[in-house]
Image (spheres, rainbow, N blue to C red):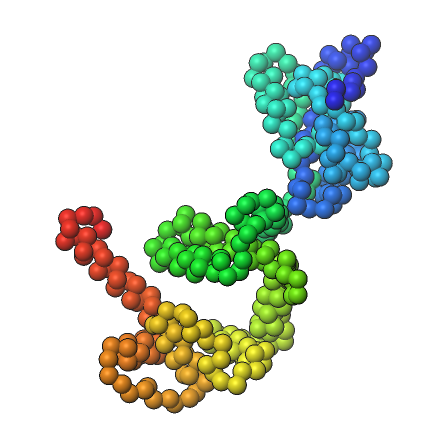
Length: 335
């Protein structure tokens, strides 16, 4: 669409006046509902001499026009926009999703030429992303991949289960290695598993649920298990917090045994430590089973580690890494 002329061409004073005017580049977030603009943005729109938008399908346009803002669907060049501001006029450009890089690059070239009296240029964010807003992008991308990717569209909860385990281990490895970049990437991979499984769950004919249901469930759980934050109870120490957590969790689960809910498929040392933790927390005095063999020795070590606050899985991994480094040194290789 061509540029809609704003300056009266019969008025050379307007084109060559001393006041160069002002350009306001108005940016908005597609993750915020259209029409929810900041007060400075509305002020700029209402006081502008002209408002332009290159995209006739921009989601903000119906709301701006409903509010009485006259918006011209126009795509000016940098020079045309500068001319439109002559005589001290203010022109607001409602940016498209990419922020009008061609226009801003053109303005930068004009300014660098030194031949043009440039108007004041202001970048005005009209709406801001809230924390977590990029999660909306992730959900949208996952929707499209599920619909259009030949591999992703055929995946099931059962088929993806192994990837969840792998990603969790890779996350732990990044944490233990202290690699910040790797940690960030692995957190994303774990998050992908959550979104992927939630998307698959939407298609279940009998008991569908969505990522919003998953998020809503964990929000409700966190609030319920933190009465010292969201309720009237008090907690001064980490021990107080743990007591609240265990009590509310017991009320939710109403388990017949302290062993209920302990996944038996987890690694052996972690399983032994979890059972020992449940037993100790419940105040039960349960002697270790007697038996010969390495398994019972490992069980005793895991229970002892848990009692002194050591994660036996993490301790063994650290020792295994040291063993790996020793092997590589024996081979003449760097650790």
